[in-house]
Length: 202
Image (tube, rainbow, N blue to C red):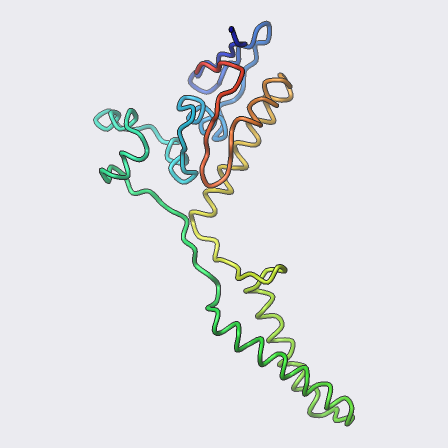
Protein backbone atom coordinates (compact mmCIF):
# COMPACT_ATOMS: atom_id res chain seq x y z
CA UNK A 1 0.00 0.00 0.00
CA UNK A 2 1.39 3.41 -0.95
CA UNK A 3 0.89 6.42 1.31
CA UNK A 4 0.97 10.13 0.39
CA UNK A 5 4.50 11.53 0.60
CA UNK A 6 5.32 14.99 1.95
CA UNK A 7 8.80 16.43 1.71
CA UNK A 8 10.16 19.19 3.96
CA UNK A 9 13.41 20.67 2.76
CA UNK A 10 15.41 22.73 5.25
CA UNK A 11 17.44 25.63 3.88
CA UNK A 12 19.41 28.42 5.57
CA UNK A 13 16.50 30.49 6.82
CA UNK A 14 13.44 28.76 5.33
CA UNK A 15 11.70 25.38 5.20
CA UNK A 16 10.23 24.38 1.84
CA UNK A 17 7.12 22.19 1.85
CA UNK A 18 6.46 19.86 -1.12
CA UNK A 19 3.09 18.10 -0.92
CA UNK A 20 1.97 17.02 -4.39
CA UNK A 21 1.22 20.24 -6.28
CA UNK A 22 1.62 22.34 -3.15
CA UNK A 23 4.95 24.10 -2.69
CA UNK A 24 5.26 26.61 0.10
CA UNK A 25 8.09 28.32 1.96
CA UNK A 26 8.07 29.00 5.70
CA UNK A 27 10.41 31.18 7.70
CA UNK A 28 12.49 28.82 9.86
CA UNK A 29 11.23 29.82 13.31
CA UNK A 30 11.95 28.05 16.61
CA UNK A 31 8.73 26.09 16.20
CA UNK A 32 9.93 24.76 12.85
CA UNK A 33 13.27 23.74 14.36
CA UNK A 34 11.42 21.75 17.06
CA UNK A 35 8.98 20.25 14.54
CA UNK A 36 11.74 19.11 12.16
CA UNK A 37 13.62 17.53 15.08
CA UNK A 38 10.51 15.53 16.03
CA UNK A 39 9.75 14.52 12.42
CA UNK A 40 13.32 13.32 11.85
CA UNK A 41 13.00 10.92 14.80
CA UNK A 42 9.53 9.33 14.47
CA UNK A 43 8.33 7.46 17.53
CA UNK A 44 11.15 8.83 19.68
CA UNK A 45 10.33 11.06 22.67
CA UNK A 46 12.08 14.38 22.99
CA UNK A 47 11.93 16.36 26.23
CA UNK A 48 10.81 19.95 25.69
CA UNK A 49 13.87 21.24 27.56
CA UNK A 50 16.29 19.31 25.33
CA UNK A 51 14.40 20.38 22.21
CA UNK A 52 15.30 23.96 23.04
CA UNK A 53 18.97 23.01 22.64
CA UNK A 54 18.20 22.17 18.99
CA UNK A 55 18.11 25.94 18.38
CA UNK A 56 21.91 25.98 18.67
CA UNK A 57 24.23 24.14 16.27
CA UNK A 58 26.31 21.29 17.72
CA UNK A 59 30.11 21.73 17.39
CA UNK A 60 31.67 19.35 14.85
CA UNK A 61 33.48 17.22 17.46
CA UNK A 62 30.20 16.46 19.25
CA UNK A 63 27.97 15.77 16.27
CA UNK A 64 28.17 12.00 16.81
CA UNK A 65 25.83 12.62 19.76
CA UNK A 66 23.08 13.38 17.23
CA UNK A 67 22.97 9.68 16.32
CA UNK A 68 22.66 8.56 19.95
CA UNK A 69 19.19 8.07 21.44
CA UNK A 70 18.01 10.33 24.24
CA UNK A 71 18.07 7.43 26.72
CA UNK A 72 21.68 6.59 25.80
CA UNK A 73 22.67 10.24 26.23
CA UNK A 74 21.17 10.28 29.71
CA UNK A 75 22.85 6.98 30.62
CA UNK A 76 26.26 8.19 29.42
CA UNK A 77 25.76 11.70 30.91
CA UNK A 78 26.56 13.22 27.54
CA UNK A 79 24.46 16.18 28.56
CA UNK A 80 22.49 17.12 31.62
CA UNK A 81 18.81 16.48 31.05
CA UNK A 82 16.51 18.86 32.86
CA UNK A 83 13.55 17.08 34.42
CA UNK A 84 10.61 19.09 35.68
CA UNK A 85 10.80 19.38 39.42
CA UNK A 86 7.65 18.87 41.47
CA UNK A 87 8.18 21.65 43.99
CA UNK A 88 5.00 22.47 45.86
CA UNK A 89 4.38 26.08 46.88
CA UNK A 90 3.63 25.06 50.49
CA UNK A 91 3.92 21.99 52.67
CA UNK A 92 0.71 20.17 53.52
CA UNK A 93 1.05 20.66 57.28
CA UNK A 94 1.19 24.44 56.88
CA UNK A 95 -1.88 24.39 54.64
CA UNK A 96 -3.69 22.24 57.19
CA UNK A 97 -2.84 24.66 60.02
CA UNK A 98 -3.81 27.75 57.99
CA UNK A 99 -7.11 26.10 56.98
CA UNK A 100 -7.85 25.22 60.61
CA UNK A 101 -7.09 28.79 61.70
CA UNK A 102 -9.31 30.19 58.94
CA UNK A 103 -12.21 27.98 60.07
CA UNK A 104 -11.67 29.19 63.65
CA UNK A 105 -11.59 32.83 62.49
CA UNK A 106 -14.87 32.35 60.59
CA UNK A 107 -16.48 30.91 63.73
CA UNK A 108 -15.21 33.85 65.83
CA UNK A 109 -16.44 36.30 63.17
CA UNK A 110 -19.96 34.86 63.41
CA UNK A 111 -19.85 35.23 67.20
CA UNK A 112 -18.60 38.85 67.03
CA UNK A 113 -21.29 39.79 64.53
CA UNK A 114 -23.94 38.34 66.81
CA UNK A 115 -22.54 40.44 69.69
CA UNK A 116 -22.12 43.50 67.42
CA UNK A 117 -18.44 43.81 68.47
CA UNK A 118 -17.29 46.01 65.58
CA UNK A 119 -13.88 46.94 67.07
CA UNK A 120 -12.71 43.33 67.45
CA UNK A 121 -14.26 42.40 64.09
CA UNK A 122 -12.02 44.79 62.11
CA UNK A 123 -8.76 43.05 63.08
CA UNK A 124 -10.31 39.62 62.62
CA UNK A 125 -11.50 40.42 59.09
CA UNK A 126 -7.97 41.54 58.19
CA UNK A 127 -6.59 38.21 59.40
CA UNK A 128 -9.34 36.34 57.54
CA UNK A 129 -8.42 38.12 54.29
CA UNK A 130 -4.72 37.32 54.71
CA UNK A 131 -5.39 33.64 55.43
CA UNK A 132 -7.80 33.35 52.48
CA UNK A 133 -5.34 35.08 50.14
CA UNK A 134 -2.53 32.71 51.18
CA UNK A 135 -4.68 29.62 50.52
CA UNK A 136 -5.75 30.99 47.12
CA UNK A 137 -2.10 31.47 46.17
CA UNK A 138 -0.94 27.97 47.13
CA UNK A 139 -4.09 25.95 46.32
CA UNK A 140 -5.90 25.41 43.02
CA UNK A 141 -9.70 25.58 42.74
CA UNK A 142 -9.76 21.78 42.81
CA UNK A 143 -8.10 21.79 46.23
CA UNK A 144 -4.66 20.69 45.03
CA UNK A 145 -1.37 22.33 45.94
CA UNK A 146 0.10 24.57 43.26
CA UNK A 147 3.69 24.16 42.03
CA UNK A 148 6.39 26.73 41.44
CA UNK A 149 6.99 27.35 37.74
CA UNK A 150 10.67 26.57 37.23
CA UNK A 151 12.78 26.80 34.05
CA UNK A 152 11.60 23.35 33.00
CA UNK A 153 7.97 24.44 33.07
CA UNK A 154 8.80 27.63 31.14
CA UNK A 155 10.61 25.54 28.51
CA UNK A 156 7.58 23.26 28.13
CA UNK A 157 5.23 26.22 27.59
CA UNK A 158 7.68 27.93 25.21
CA UNK A 159 8.19 24.80 23.07
CA UNK A 160 4.46 24.03 23.02
CA UNK A 161 3.51 27.54 21.83
CA UNK A 162 6.24 27.58 19.16
CA UNK A 163 5.24 24.14 17.83
CA UNK A 164 1.55 25.08 17.75
CA UNK A 165 2.38 28.20 15.71
CA UNK A 166 4.35 26.13 13.18
CA UNK A 167 1.50 23.60 12.87
CA UNK A 168 -1.02 26.43 12.38
CA UNK A 169 1.16 27.88 9.59
CA UNK A 170 1.04 24.52 7.82
CA UNK A 171 -2.73 24.19 8.23
CA UNK A 172 -3.28 27.61 6.61
CA UNK A 173 -1.66 26.54 3.33
CA UNK A 174 -2.22 22.76 3.48
CA UNK A 175 -5.20 21.94 5.76
CA UNK A 176 -5.05 18.10 5.40
CA UNK A 177 -1.34 18.01 6.27
CA UNK A 178 -1.84 20.50 9.11
CA UNK A 179 -4.62 18.39 10.64
CA UNK A 180 -2.58 15.21 10.18
CA UNK A 181 0.46 16.64 11.97
CA UNK A 182 -1.64 18.22 14.73
CA UNK A 183 -2.97 14.73 15.53
CA UNK A 184 0.36 12.97 15.12
CA UNK A 185 2.71 15.34 16.95
CA UNK A 186 2.11 15.03 20.68
CA UNK A 187 3.16 18.18 22.50
CA UNK A 188 3.77 18.82 26.19
CA UNK A 189 6.61 17.80 28.53
CA UNK A 190 7.57 15.11 26.01
CA UNK A 191 7.30 15.77 22.29
CA UNK A 192 6.89 12.82 19.92
CA UNK A 193 5.83 12.30 16.31
CA UNK A 194 3.85 9.09 15.75
CA UNK A 195 3.64 8.42 11.99
CA UNK A 196 0.32 7.47 10.43
CA UNK A 197 -0.93 7.07 6.86
CA UNK A 198 1.44 9.62 5.40
CA UNK A 199 5.19 9.64 4.81
CA UNK A 200 7.06 12.80 5.85
CA UNK A 201 10.62 13.13 4.57
CA UNK A 202 12.91 15.78 6.07
